[in-house]
Amino acid sequence: MSSILTYIAIADGKVKRSSLEVLSHSKKLADAAGFTTEAVIIDPNASNYVEDVQKYGASKIYLVEDALFSEHRNSPLLSALAKIVETVDPKVTAFASTEGTKDILGALAANQKAAVVADVSSFELIDGGIKATRPVMAAKILANVEAKGNKVLVSVRSGSYDLNESPATAEVISVDAGVSEGDLKAKLREIISSTSDTIDLNEAESIVAAGRGVKDDEGKALISELAGVLNAGIGASRALTESGMYDPSLQIGQTGKVVSPQLYIAVGISGAIQHVAGMANSKVIVAINKDPDAPIFEVADYGIVGDLYKVLPPFIEELKKIKT
Ligand SMILES: Cc1cc2nc3c(=O)[nH]c(=O)nc-3n(C[C@H](O)[C@H](O)[C@H](O)COP(=O)(O)OP(=O)(O)OC[C@H]3O[C@@H](n4cnc5c(N)ncnc54)[C@H](O)[C@@H]3O)c2cc1C
Image 1 (cartoon, rainbow, N blue to C red):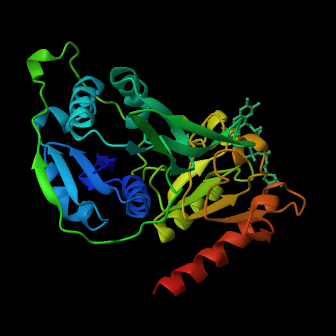
Image 2 (cartoon, helix red, strand yellow; image 1 turned 180 degrees about the horizontal axis):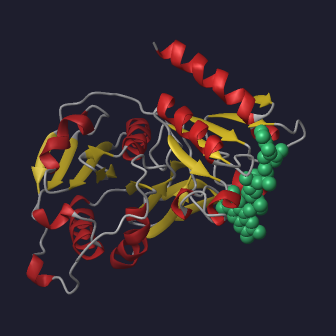
């Protein structure tokens, strides 16, 4: 029987939410097509995540459990994935569009002579492959693309699909990575994190983003407090990453991160096209800006026209009250 195989990414001891979103969608497509829903976990503690993954409907879970995968390294990951794709022979192999996926997808496609579409916002099965929608040109244009072939790979932007639990009892199959430390030509010495921010913006359910309207430490403290109350990640416009007020890794937009959280609060951000390109896919957008004509209100679901220094303190207090 044909299958859709989803690669489950693990980070910081947790299954990435974006992988489960892809698995939820794959399950829906597989059920409609009479395919099986399968998943692969590649991690030193892969078996720890079986329970999470079968909750989303995988009926077969392949585990590559090896200390080699304690850090992201493209060469062993590529070998393990190539082996799995050859063994399982799925109709489609689906990935969340994470940094790790970006690092290996092209190489895996070349290695497997597979058709590949990267960074799509939706995909469906068609005869001989998939059709997908892919935001291009800073998300100004949605390209409809097709990938056909014996092997098809697709990566999906986070936030494109909702999580949908559909518990199954999975058959768990252990697979040997087929590669050992001695086979690797490159050694990973150290990973230097560029930011101390602990919430990964690509995975964050909520993001509070600061723009040039946030002028000083007082404004920055308000942003941090709001993010703290909402357990949100902090992002910034290019105006504030270029000024050095926020780390460049927190920049959202065309030349920064593309995010799609459930809630995006833009504070003192005008809504330039290059910024909107990175956040327009958010589920609910709230904008706080003193200029009623700011373009950010065109993409916002809720808008507050006012001075952020006056709006945020009572806003934060109200949220705290609701939380308690
Ligand atoms: C090739 C290229 C790539 C780019 N890539 C990116 C990118 O990835 N990400 C990105 O963000 N930008 C990017 N830019 C820059 C982009 O064009 C804008 O210049 C930038 O987004 C503006 O940031 P901003 O909205 O914070 O600042 P501004 O445009 O200056 O807007 C500040 C806003 O704050 C409001 N404001 C001021 N004071 C207050 C207050 N007290 N209370 C409430 N509101 C207030 C103002 O009304 C205004 O709307 C790129 C530009 C180029 C040319």
